[in-house]
Image (cartoon, rainbow, N blue to C red; front, side, top):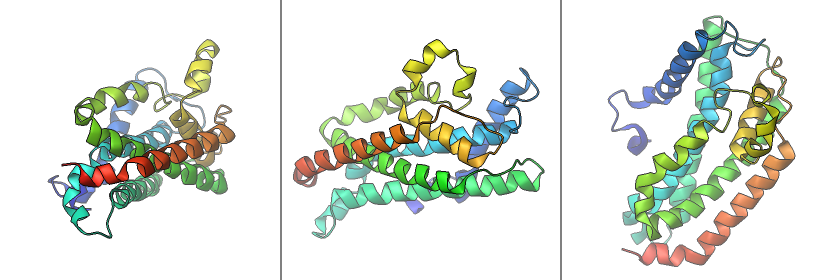
Length: 239
């Protein structure tokens, strides 16, 4: 927690300020276009349902690339392995992600921006497998970060296009159908669609495929574990 927030002057408040700033910008932009961006769901809540999951994915991507090098001194202790560093970072980001959603939903409700809740069990299932996806991704990327450290410098360029392809500020039903076949390959889009469906009763997103998300998450986790299993000794020995 100290290394995650200690360098910011605002400290732990940045956990809430970062998504709020994203939401404010998007709400300001889309308020000029229409009164209700998605009928039945207040625009700030709609944006929160996309921004919070995407920030979790972004930090899993970035922290996975640097997990080994940032914690190399800890590996002098025989009981600690790179897996521990990756798991801890993903767990921290996951707790921040869930805490951000809960806190901001409460703050928005305090100011009268709310809508009826829909499906708690769906949210639990989606987030369990989203965590698995993030862990698998970070395990694979920790190897990439050691073997190809220059890729870490290009990580913002790799993640930024996904911001516009993952439904962060739109619903898939607002996109022409001819583009659905391409966007539906993106697991993050399914996470966001299912998150909004679970959070908001008036959100009628019919494009979030839970089966696809489960399959993608298990595949990514298996891939990450296999990559780590094959390379973990090299991670500890590399200088």
